[in-house]
Image 1 (spheres, one colour):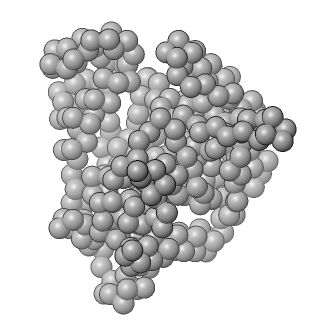
Image 2 (spheres, one colour):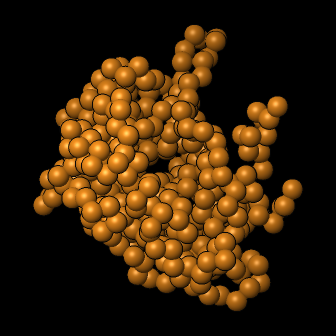
Image 3 (cartoon, rainbow, N blue to C red):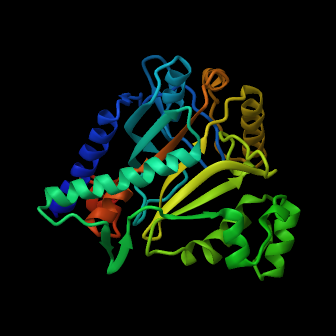
Length: 336
């Protein structure tokens, strides 16, 4: 085992925790066993069973629901570094069945403010690791023989700009299933048997956009379709899109941020829509959390982000394999 890459993960976690404690955030230890969780597109929960009480629990797909319940009660700026789990996703070079997620929330802020914090945070963590390694402080990160400049500002693009630039698609005119099927057909995609919007959107994004993102600096992608963003505030002047960003470093998606939705009626409708979609398509359904919905209806103005700690450590350790920064990766338990 290469302990040096494991130590970089250790130092990453230490530096993340120190950053938020130094900035007066409350650290929350979130539960691993949940009776109900939010039901979101493309996120499927692992289920476990408590035999003593004949009761099902679900493992968290993120620490979000627990943190938002505390925010609705007035805890203020807070963060958690937690293990999270995703079913119906395979393990691979950048994904483990259980992985470490940092999630933080800032009061009276929006997703643009979270982007500012993210830039500062990543640079400070990198400098902290360089100090641990007794290396000179620099803003230039070498990852897989590519130099990435972490100096601010990073690149900012809207998703609509990227679809127009790289795929020649007006995304605002492709927000329904029929529209995106027609566009995909015209571009030569196989649409046989596809009856929903998201698979074709994802194919186009991965094939025509993600691989073309600049890699000399980190990239923020702003304003995602509302149908992919059920927990986000809508963009006030851009119908069909919501205040969300994802950010990429070295070609890897590292984090996902929102201006937080605080309308319980809209949230209930979104969860009901997703539940119906799963039922109609014979996909796993879990009970969604009414207490979470009620808490979101009492949220102050705030924004939050989930950040993949293992992937961030991969960048600092200059490795393409998530197993290099996890002592006990899932693959070790399922090898034949």
